[in-house]
Image: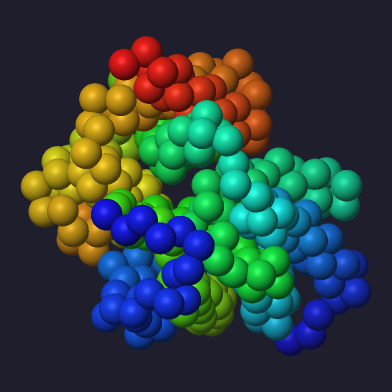
Length: 108
Length: 243
């Protein structure tokens, strides 16, 4: 129930390299009026990053890529997409996603 | 459509700008944080971290995927440089989230922006982006309400996972690990639904998925997410110029 010194240093180091990219753009860019093309570009970032994260989660498991064969995560993902489009509720989408996966993993 | 960019302070505070509203808007993500945080706590405990170390890790690092990697690499006795570099690359995507939100906090001082950025996550970013439709700025109090709720919930979930982890050895069996992709899917769909430019958004989203999958197949590792985001956003910008 204690904190070992080398673990403490590792946590602080990892936290520092995480903190910098989180704060620098907000602290710096918010002081300038960005050019129109930059605003246009930033406008697509939310969709791009969420889609990239979804792609990574559904197609990469334990560092290996599996596309359409033997991929129950993809099946669960499609059902979750349907739930999101149908309900437009984040909470219900997450619950349905978990339940789908629970059932799919019991079946396979 | 709000047009006064320069004087948001004079704008009357509406109900959806309060700290409490930020807390409420965070609620739909809490289940996701709880299950992922719980799973992270289990994995961290299994990797040999103490409860106090797990608490410190979630307080200071506060990043889901990075904490899984941290635990995995500690368990595998990886080098200090290896761990810190990997976490840096995995979390570098925050630079894009932070940049994308910056236009909406232009009315705040750099110090206040740092406070907002320090608790920025994929999920709070997703919720905040969903709220930018038709707005020129976001409320500071609302953002703090959102951020602090997510943060406290994350820490509690990690510690709960660390305590209860000895009885639940395999959280995957219950589908709990799928809370993370499910939350990303929900945030993606809700954003696309609220933006009113579905065609471009679908092209951007599909490009991002294809790029990240191809790069993962080529073993690019943690830069894949960042590269896919940069390229897909550029595709979106170019399409916007054509039309």
